[in-house]
Length: 276
Ligand SMILES: C[S@@+](CC[C@H](N)C(=O)[O-])C[C@H]1O[C@@H](n2cnc3c(N)ncnc32)[C@H](O)[C@@H]1O
Image (cartoon, rainbow, N blue to C red; front, top):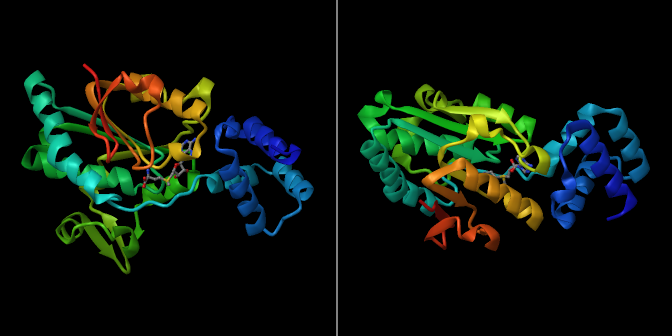
């Protein structure tokens, strides 16, 4: 990597403790270049000076590193499988053990479409019993603007292209040309700004985010080098309860080193179960 990109990485690490050296180099360079073009500062030295003098620019760069594309029920087959077999299995096991608590973590949740989609499925699965259960759905992302959008929860129509009409009608309220999840769904999801990339501080803390029934980490690891993918997968392996589920993006995979921790439930749709 050139001295310039190295210097950018050092500056981001210094200011925000985020280690971009663990990202795929081609992608990282493209995203940094994209940010420089966007603010019409194509000269590396000028950009570096700007970055060193401005924490706002550092935040803006970080927000530009992750590609934030998301939508409700993205890859609908995955959400169908979650609704029809995974969630019923989770709930049935809870009933057997006398627990009425469900904990789900959406890692790299972007502007919130994924965790709100999950909340809708949990709501549909529990129906009238919903108030008897404690449901915790956490959405985390390093992009502060995306997390702000997730919290305000106002979405344009094009984010719902793979949302069933009945679901849109029941769980989302029109706001002019936009849509907002109903309060009951919004209240089920808790957001925070968290970086999952820095190995010595691989967030969030186990104490808050342990014992998950399901972890969704979809279309996030594709940007990471193998070393970071592995430490993240190890983290998930610790954070998911025995018999709980890990759902990756359809172009992501388990690293061989953690394969023995999980049973493959659906290879094509990247759904795995933590071994008992
Ligand atoms: C393409 S979006 C995926 C959104 C959602 N999971 C989905 O599949 O629709 C990738 C997200 O990962 C986030 N991301 C990238 N690196 C991250 C990191 N180190 N920590 C937390 N979030 C990260 C980006 O900010 C971006 O919002």
